[in-house]
Length: 319
Image 1 (tube, one colour):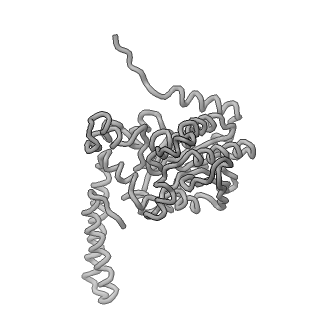
Image 2: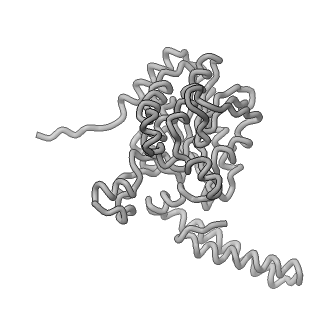
Image 3: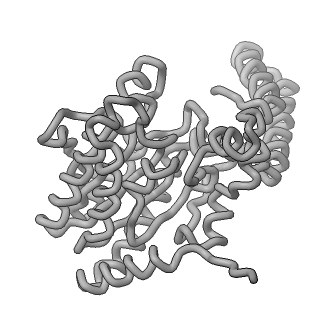
């Protein structure tokens, strides 16, 4: 288990508990057992105190936690079956985008997710969850398939943003993102999106222009990263904590603004401590939303989706 800076007091106690458990296995000493129980209560209390008072920057750190569950960690608990499809039929296959056909209980589903790596080797393969144009075109191909097969769309989003490299721009990164957003808005079938970690800029919105959008409790969703905003606004990337506060990028912030439709509570300590529970909560939320959306016609879905997004934002006019 990797501990963030603000979690280190918890880490010290949990390491002590593990050490005592090993001693108890050898000695079967009742005093050691009581000490373990006492420390476990202290850990629970400490977790509650720390995670009840997180700053926005600490939530950013949790959203980026290296052990945070990725789509391929969640999919086995959400879906009974998943068949991955590859390629955009134009250039190649982007490993940062995982897409395919799935079954969630009795429903056939088109599933698209953005996948970060679990270690350095896989992060290089997945390009740290930053999709290329072919990744977004793969998503568009799956959205077309969803309409053709009349299957609902489920997306899992965790990306710092689309890949900004020269090659990606040469292959039409901006248009791929724009067309992915447009295609999601035009879907004749229900769509439900989940921000599971980072929801960075247009790279995230390309897979999140859905009928319903939900965020995990410690995920973030923003037009720009705190570091990027600090560089622009404060001319100092080191002022990322101040930028995170100003951007208001947490699930609670965005729910209050009406940008998202709901928040999925995470286990105490974050999603990485119990990925199965998080996945089952995502599944339950998806099924509830889908049952509501399936009662609506294609025309109603498109009209309400359009109204949902054009009504976002507030303007203040001054003389």
